Each structure stands twice: as structure tokens, then as C-alpha cells.
Amino acid sequence: MRRVFAAALTLLFALSSHADHARAETALHLTVSEVIVALDEANAAFSAAWVAGDVDAIMAAYTEDAIVHPPAGGVLTTPAHIRTVWAPITNWQRVGHRLEPTVREALSGGEVLEMGRWHSARRNEAGEAPWTSGCYTVIWRNDNGRWRMRYDSWTAANDNSWACRPRGD
Image (cartoon, rainbow, N blue to C red; front, side):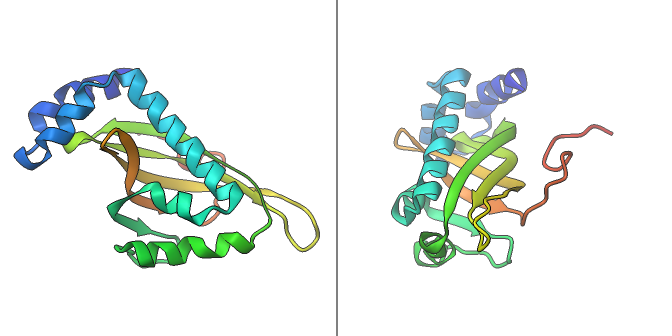
């Protein structure tokens, strides 16, 4: 994965449009390892915000022009609408959350496609905290040195072990 990501990052500048030139140039000054570490840190910060029920920190993880496509449907394109998806978490008995990337690929304009599995646990009425998992897709953008989500979509729980992992023909 690192080799494909590195090759795509190397070609990023040549493929970017004029409007994306500055973003692509900024991304090129980062090594592949730096991008991977930064995205892992951004994922960990998102998970920490989810566990804390910190809707403001979750909202800060998105770009101003973010698009969110939650499992219930709809395409949310404003911060006010995106906030409505996350506001209920303050009432949940959150126990844990983590993101497990399975694909990362550089896109034109300095953005990075990430796909993987989400895992979360929250306490139910019986006091149990079962873990559930599903798939997610994010497009990350380096926004003035901070990786933020430009696009975010996730599925409802799908605990099949093969789900969300690349498969060949």
C-alpha cells in the first residue's frame, strides 16, 4: 500500500488542476510517512471526540465545504446539517471508537481517499457494551497543515470480517 500511495503522491502535482495547485504543492512537501502519521492522528482525534461526545471537535474535523453521507441517507452539505447527525452522541453511553484504514490513495488536488472499517461500542439498556463495526469512506484534505475531512460516508453496522477490505478478482 505504501508503494502505491507513494507513486500516487509523486504524480499528484502533475495531475492537479491550476485551482488545486497550492494544495497539491503543500501535500507534495510531505513524505508518505508524514501523511500516514498525520491521517492516523486525525483518525485518533476523531475517535477521541466521538468517545468524549465532543460534537464541536467532531465538527472541527470537517472542512467548511464538507459533504457527509450518513447510512440513513441524505447528502449533508452545510455545517448546520452535518451537526444534526452528530448532536445525538452527547446522549449515548459511549465506550470506545476506532478507525481501521484498509485503503489509502492519493487523489489529485492534494486530497487522500481513505476507506476502512469503523468500530464502536456504547452501553445499552442492559449495561452491556458490545462492539459493532462497519465500513467508511473519507476524502481527506490538507487544510492549512491540518488534515480534515472533505467527504465522509459510513455504513450501518456490518460485522462480516471480509467487509471493507480490498479483494481481488
